[in-house]
Length: 149
Image (cartoon, one colour):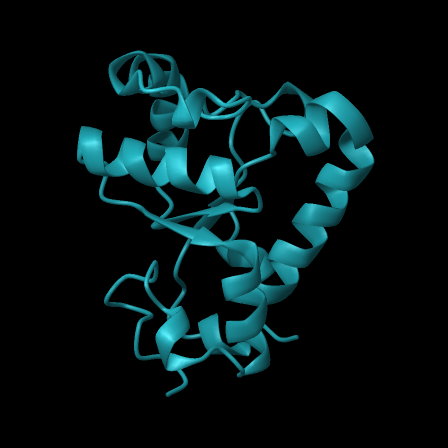
């Protein structure tokens, strides 16, 4: 793994601390592991942490089955705090290790016109290793979609 791909681009990233993984089970140690991996793949200087973060980070509003509940207006209303938190970082991308978080955070950006991209952690790991396939770039913005092809 290397962050060399982002050395000159300087694309900024933030990361979501998933409720089930961080707040409800493994706590701050796993949040630190997440940050180690993120900094390793995007570069220390290109990571912007949300405030608050780790065990105190806000829920995205899409977990626990809410994403599939059929109440998108309510889900977006409760997710607005997460949306505002992401936008406040100024990051171009929000890394979401959890699939429910990814879908919710992506939807929040589309709905509220946030302008940030939502990307899976594994996408960036593969990108940093030079093994991200052409068909695995759906959530990358135009700035990264062709990188390494």
